[in-house]
Length: 157
Length: 429
Ligand SMILES: [Zn+2]
Image (cartoon, rainbow over all chains, first blue to last red; front, side):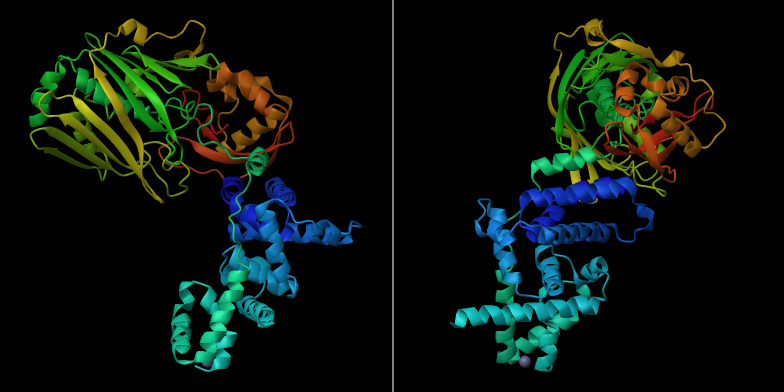
């Protein structure tokens, strides 16, 4: 049981970065990580979890998806809120990357983020997303090809 | 290789898993001979580059504090881990001191040290500043290779038949009058006394405390895998001892690297060949992430005017508990460690003082503090007990919801090696 506490504390940078680049907001990223933390310590039997690190990342991923979903159902016009460029450089960077990936199917963008931002291997990504490794790899290949076309089209004109 | 295959497997160029090394090599070879795929690869790399964050983002302090508040990472030592056990840091130091101050050196032992020890006779006091990777309030033997150095001070006076010493970590102080050791937490004005020095300091290390060589040789002879080396280049005598971690880690490495004895360690002492005085002492431990110095002597002063009574003095306002006259009780005898842990932790909720006074008998002086921390808390889970290192008891993993709502995970250290055979907590909380 020591591992949960240790793990979250030791992985805090990776977990925070993961949430920040998905949510685009430092405050929200903090809240998401805190949610995960609470969930983990209050009722998960780690003995039943295979790879603890993958499990942690999956929890963060789910927490971000939940937040993004509730944000969409929020009446607040997200576009307006996002229009003002954030002052924080990490939030700005998250926004820039987010806009680049916005044109891709969500599941492809997610694998690209996991591989490039979070430096997870495809085997880990597959475990976290509960998909076959071949699927993780092809999502990456399709997604990055689409992005490649998108960027070369931009540079062509 | 077909170009189509190259494009489908482009992911392999952006991962470094060893299992795909052969595929990557093949693909790289293809880019060398196919301009079209080379271009495809370059453009894909540019796309990857574009979505790669250009700034580092690390968890803000506020988040770290929030996480730590939620998951209070259980301290291995906490208030008083295995208080009755070896004070190995003090022991290492004490050896040095005992050598340096040895009133009647064993002349026959060790060629170089025979000479050195004679010279030591002249030194009546020794004051040493040393740095130790530990927590200031922790038990004297506790080390943490990932912690910062804590400056400690050691003063010792050679009496007629005993060495009187004081070891001060800032948050915890230990003194020995040569017979009884006392230690206390200055901030809490509470402490413990009644540790018999010959029982509480590593008996093996100090079996023959007159000389470091003798003690270390003894250690090498009685502990498996200890290597020992001495060189003398005419100006410096250098003694190196390599010792593997003592204890059993087959169930858990929880205690590994929490004390010098429980680490794969190297102790290097340098003495001036002429004066025989200690020049330096460094202890390093080998951890998974490399070799880390955990103890080093910063400065040594000999023959400072130190008074033995002052060195061993305990401030008058410290409330002391005598370990020799503890009342262990028997409420937690005849059961398993896990059963004892459940009884104890469940008693936290309504603070069953009759049971907790027995279970926390070592914590008498800081009972109010323990109650403040754990009173009203509810146990949510217990794990399988395990043993680790040299700890004579068992560790029981426990998860609690504290009265304030925070969640706390800890490995309760329980032992029943007392006359009553009853389980008592001596660490983890
Ligand atoms: Zn080709």
